[in-house]
Image (cartoon, rainbow over all chains, first blue to last red; front, side, top):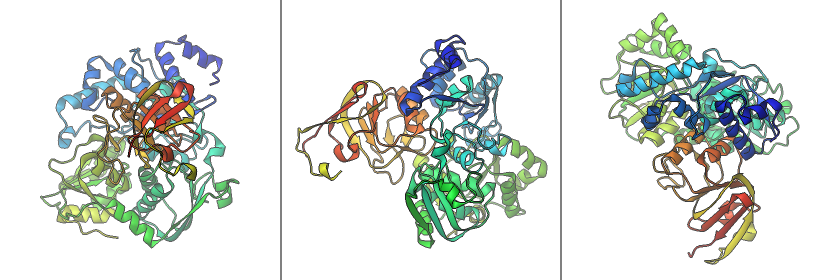
Amino acid sequence: MKLTDYEKEMFDGVHGRAKARAMDLLVRYGQALGAERLVETNNVAGAFNASTPSVRDLVKKGFDAVYSELNLDSAEVVEVPKMVAHTCQLITGIDNERWRVQGIPDDLAEQQKRGEEFFGSRGINMFATCTPYQVGNVPVKGEHCAWMESSAVVYCNSVLGARTNTEGKESTGAAALTGRIPYWGYHIKDNRRGTHLVEIDIDVDDIMDWGLLGYYLGEIIDDEIPVLTGRYKQPSLIKLKHFGAAAASSGGVEMYHIPDITPEARTVEEAFGGNPVRGTVRYGEKERRTAYENLNCATERNIDFVMLGCPHNSIDQVWLIASLLDGRKISTNTELWVHTPRALREVADRNGYTKMIMDAGGQVMSDTCPAISRHMPKGTKVVATDSAKQAHYLPAITGVSAWFGSVKDCVEAAVSGRWNGGL
Amino acid sequence: MSDVAAPAKAGTRIVLRGRKVVGGCAEGEAIVTRDTISGWGGINERDGTVIERRHELRGQSFKDKILVFPGAKGSSGWSAYFHMARLNGASPRAMIFNKMTTKIALGAVVTHAPAMTELEQDPLQVIETGDWVKVDADNGIVEITKRAR
């Protein structure tokens, strides 16, 4: 790989051991990809935490050791300096205030907080959400980023027109210390053009519609670049957040175009940019039903747990749930957790939404989600959720069975304790 | 790939050339899937089993095997989970895959096991679960010995 003089200095250790180990990882990674060079980045979103039981032994050696092994793939323990790139922490396993509701032991919550002190003092912003673009990290078109979190990556590329690959814990750890990431994949303009045409034959409008469309597409086209045409209504942040998260769960979609809506495609022609159309996917009633059936693995209609807020809810989604619950009570057999970024939770508290949800018997959680934490209310066997992503991952990770449906269906299930949702 | 569709006789040796992703040399029994694999949410990092619902390998472990698969999908926790599988001694001995992505490149790098891609024939057509496979990534060579069926 071709390195600049400054990159060579970092590689050779002129700027300290941490940067040398970071460059070593970036070069190994770049060579594996077949990248010719690195690109400068000043926007990193990664996994800077020590929140799982499996890292307890590593934590005993100190947080320099945690960062060295898990964020740099370095067996040599290096002293971690301040980050050079603007860097933020994504979602974590523990709610810093409500870990007892999650059923997390106090010592693990304490471990996360000590970790955050360390990472925070190096300049890593503790957003603690899978949706940094909801709390102030909104990259501009063309900005080179190094982001993790598949649902955030697809949003960053497609909706914002910034450029990132799906990075990992180690590459973001190295990028934060060097301000560099391999110049490959979605950093290169030619790789961002559409590959598959999607013809939508039914109305796609609400959050559930967009989730189903994303889940279907991901499975069919894997990590290619779809270009949407047909009968969709104008989407919003919330809908595209769900759409991208679903497509990045059933498949590996990291980029899509919606002509006249997303920033790199004013027209279908511009979306393909001269690329041949490699495939056409039709999405109609039958395909919608297939996605729905693939997502709904439960048969038991008594619901133990209703999970809302994956990806983390916007404040408007929290309000919608609060209004649907206003003056009502959740079934004594069912628990309801609503997940929103910590910064938005502040607004929910201030507005009284948190109180409305809690008065009904629900919980408002931040920093985490059940799929990441692997913690749900004790004894949960059947889950209902409005998130295709959570319905995809929770059964695999925790062995529960899941119902997927609209926000309204989920709130009704929480109140009655029974699943009555449907297409 | 119809030229390799006929079942090869037990003991038949096939040599394929490809591109090194991570250097090194390792051999072992192949575990082959036509489904892409998720890291976070797709594998159990403690024992190397695939846990995804509706996955061809669900319940089977790649620990100490030569993992042959189309590529990576899903969460960006891919590398972190294969990284932890290595720390737990549950990682594959080598990897052979078709489609290059950042998830698999970084995941292969932090697994510290030989890895190869861009083989001259589709490894999913040539290699079957149970075949003995030697991955000499330093020299860009995969050697397959067909097992008895």
